[in-house]
Image (cartoon, rainbow, N blue to C red; front, top):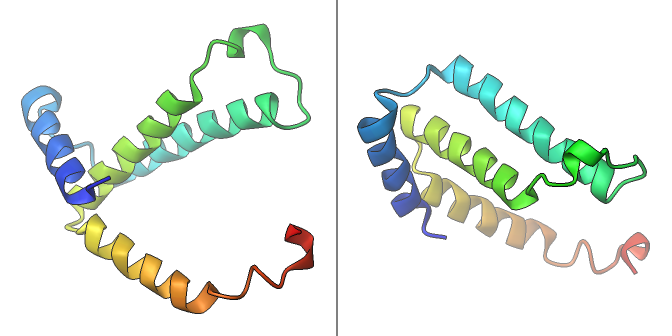
Length: 108
């Protein structure tokens, strides 16, 4: 996913359909809500909780996309180049964790 392009798509959408960004605290609350919805689906569908009938039609992909949308909003309104930040993080993780997980007996 080209994050820079995704950030622009979200920014254009906000300017066209959303009037303006919600403030950062509101978006943080929105992000928390969306992550909670992802957690609910995963806990019930893949975890030990039973899935309620009303949750069976919930689309995990749609909920994950909601999380990505709000993250892109937060990046835009705080001036973060998410692609640069992501690339930097992947480089760091690659260097730091190159052999770390291969030696973990719990993962075999």
